[in-house]
Figure 1 (cartoon, protein in one colour):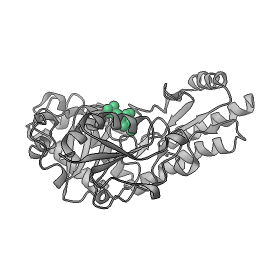
Figure 2: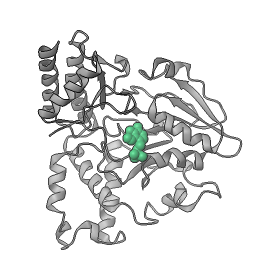
Figure 3: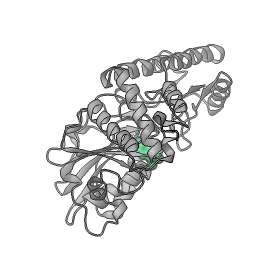
Figure 4: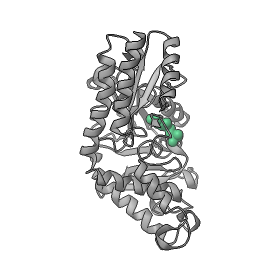
Length: 358
Ligand code: PLP
């Protein structure tokens, strides 16, 4: 299948094959990794190696903790304000679409929220002008959604927030390109796009932000619990972390994040070029300067034509091209594991479909 699903999304075929080989017998122990203790030396090795691989690939400084949590990125929407907003403080958010909105909704449960910038008036087709960002000095942090998976917009540069920690939801673009981790207070991501299968949520946090949670926060929702126990307070999602480990080795084998970025840009360009050279037959949703290289959103002149496009593409083996139910249209998600050949096949299909229906 040409898998363009938005999430859970494509995994590298080599990784799936490797996991299949080790499925019933992990490294000769005669059992699956799913069947052994999370305190065993075999699992601990995977756990630590996965952290080391992330540190190496993302160049994560030593004063940052790497946590493997559960509950998805959606739980982070609540855990962040629950842990970080102290008395007398507020939180600040950039509103860029559906996912930012969900994060804002949770933050409002824990105190005052400032919307430092919003592209609502632009129908979330672009990232707001960051030069006009006005962060309230009482803000415990500024939160951004690095890539809006539904709208198809992505930050090309992150705002300068001075002493106020910058927090980014990178659920749908983590590891798609190099980022300077030292500019962030925290980065988090559900695994099920670029990291591995669902079930584990990655949190990369500057030590001082996660050292002490407020007293009233329950044990499992406290960052300090997971920091103190190196994400082994309770049973971690062992199999998901093992899969992330394999995905990280696959990325390392590709040469690292600069190479991955180049590859992703080339893949996305194939599809954006098909849109831009279609004389309006396909219309890109995002303003070109903020186009995502992970989620390519576009529309056609009528819903009927879009339905026909989806039906015909399915017959040709394309999967997941229907836009999110909240916005309609079409969306091709071109995460790290989507091969160049799939993107080329989609661009060719788009050109051919236009010839037949334009
Ligand atoms: N944030 C973004 C940008 C997403 O794309 C998603 C999921 O698709 C989420 C958050 C929610 O992630 P989860 O399903 O892990 O809670």
